[in-house]
Length: 293
Image 1 (cartoon, helix red, strand yellow):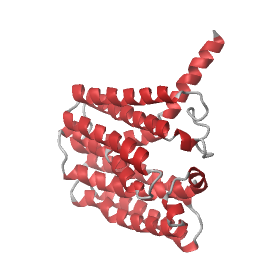
Image 2 (image 1 turned 90 degrees about the vertical axis):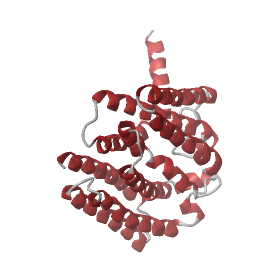
Image 3 (image 1 turned 30 degrees about the horizontal axis):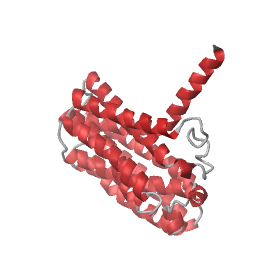
Image 4 (image 1 turned 90 degrees about the horizontal axis):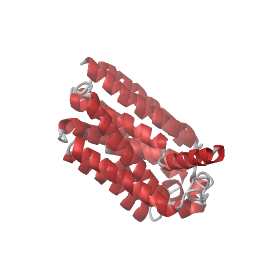
């Protein structure tokens, strides 16, 4: 009996690992921010619950399908070779069914309990991440980052549409912030694990154009991100608290990127960690300031 329970726990744990819970959590944070901004306050708890469940399931399902299609590549990278599929703990076909089922349940939840536009945006996000990004482009070109940034920028728009039933200028601003942020966020990750990507034959930007070129683009995108992150203030989506916070966070981001560019040292880990801190605090500050307005 004890051995059977341990086996079940292992199976559950492996399926949770497939779903990439860390990514799901970050997606839910920015999606909730989009809901707050759409509602101009806290939406009904029922709507928050079903929306976040739907987004979480779709994100998890997309991650599982990503694991399914990347299974051969994952066997070659030290970072990913311990995942359940490369290790043989979960059969690829089971992962495929699991991922598709999660996405299907998510879309049904949105159609039955939220609205059609949020369902369509969720389906679009999953499609872009699984088909163009993972299946078609990842092993062919470093430009895949631009495509992946689209799906990564949609969660706050989905949250916004869930409470309003529309896509308005405020949602577009959230999309623009997330879209620009995705690039330096991933490039820092790619620098950190470029040797792994090299073994797997994935032409990420540090391998295709070099670390120096990657740091140049990282610096450019962090510079572009700063003024875009200030747009919510000028559209009266936030107040002075958010403006000051966004300026401080943005300047620190630029400083870290500039230091890496000038010294030509690899600050991939620092930039990657800060990128997560940056977007989390930025959206938290936006919500807090919006509630005060």
